[in-house]
Length: 376
Image (cartoon, rainbow, N blue to C red):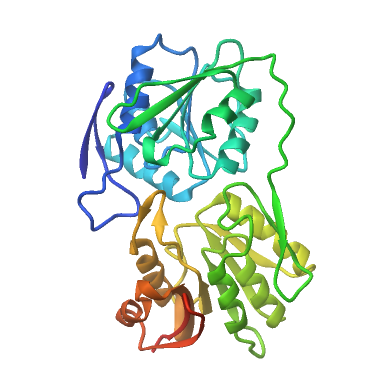
């Protein structure tokens, strides 16, 4: 648990998922800069909209002060963090409403606090969607740590919201503040990308923010030929599915398979759902926005396919991958298989032996390896 002193009171906060690294906090200087700047201004009329609040720090601080606040974002893990930290601070269940990226908050907002995401396409999509929610002298304050601030972020604010001012740097964080300009008339951006699943005529659509939206990533490309073909009904999970490439290929090879697509990104699941329906017309599948396989029943899968992430937001590490490996073992039937692809230097072949009786390489190239892991 971390103590976070904000202009609105002291919070008790945790990261979600939990981390073994005590130096990683659920807040940073950009969060504090946003909160202090908001506190120094005349209170906004009506509710405040918070966007991309990674661990609920912004929303919980505002709710602690009695502000009506809505949180909008694409990450289910961020939603879980918000729920967790609202409970840590004895906030009522209805203190903060979370709206996922595939929906729009309702109402008009005089103040928006936005954490600038890594993906410029996601930022552009969010700013375009926000325009109808702004009116009069609505103010949007966007923040990021300097090392993660995309150079074009200010240009997008000026295009979709209004002219902006950049703050002085504070503790290596910076804010961009834009006032709504109703005279702007930006064209609706076409941000969904498309490319073809290798060796097929299946077109894969990628909504803004989805992993590897410009081209199929190398790891997935290396793993596709390793997906097995089986007779009869087999339960296959595409874990961390992104646009659904692995699961769709598995469905094409296994015509009687029962497919489940899982990701923590609402945009990823929306993309995978659309792609599966186009690639496999008439077939059913389950699409779950979830913290991996945490909610899966034991022995509910015969095969899990996983191209695991190696970061959460800007923090690089293997903790997310290790959680997915543990969850996969718990969800697989005895004798079930996990297929994993990863960079050779990550050493997954050693780490996976903590959970699986057999770990063997079945594919790869100079940079990536594909590992088959059998549960005893």
